[in-house]
Image 1 (tube, rainbow, N blue to C red):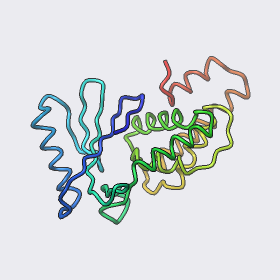
Image 2: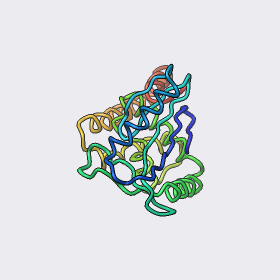
Image 3: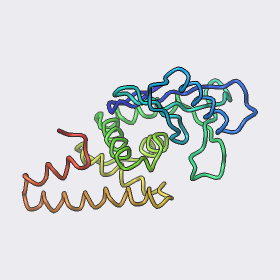
Image 4: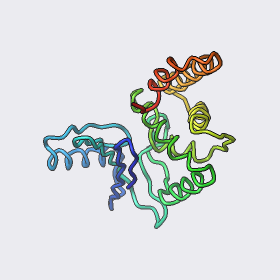
Length: 200
């Protein structure tokens, strides 16, 4: 289970049975959630079932046991396969090391991108965002540079029109910010930043 500062909690539920397609397991999770949390907002958000409890959103992912290190999870809808292999422990270890190697800026950059991704209707899954950004090589100094470098790299995995619009919108925001910074117009910089970043 992982948690980020934007109140999203990802939970992996491992099923013993391996005989069904992803939708069957998603339906089971949804039924369980509806029975146990009848007052909560519960809805499918492929490849998860989302449960909103007060200010916390849980995203429950069904998984099938493969080995002590690997599980199968539902593939994104953009892929032809039904299942994909995942190694949660390895991904978390790589994320921790990448964050350490980059002055602690990787995790905040990922959280910001997930926040903007959420505001944009979640064109990318959290899994795809983390996987892409952990494997990227960075040459940055400040958090905003990490954010833009990381978000630009999503171009490599943007296959749907919604995903492409998401990446282009960030590029356009960055272009406008550069103009404002070049002309030293601080009264417009903060509103522009607040349209992307979770700042108050």
